[in-house]
Length: 149
Image (cartoon, rainbow, N blue to C red; front, top):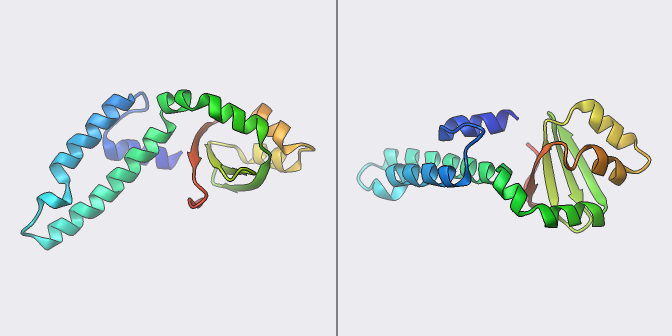
């Protein structure tokens, strides 16, 4: 959850920001701070590149957890969580990553440690996750190459 707060602060948006407003904020920042706009000062160009990378990462992350994005992908997410089994679990700092047998992965934010313990000890992890995790916590799709930090 701290990551979400930091990204919102970086972009200067609140939790109710729409995708359109987020995109507008992103474009305005890139117009002003794009590294290609700086030609004569190498130090400033490097600083702008680093700032741009952080801003791009924040933008993509916030887009992935936006209610509009979640609603758009709800049908495929529901099909995934009811069709495929859990292949792997990883928990760190209230973030739970679930990898599915089809190769996709999702991160869930704000998951209490006792909920994770119950998931690990459940007779059917899939059934427990469907009842207590999949639609109970903020989530985003992550690729297999992403790692839990």
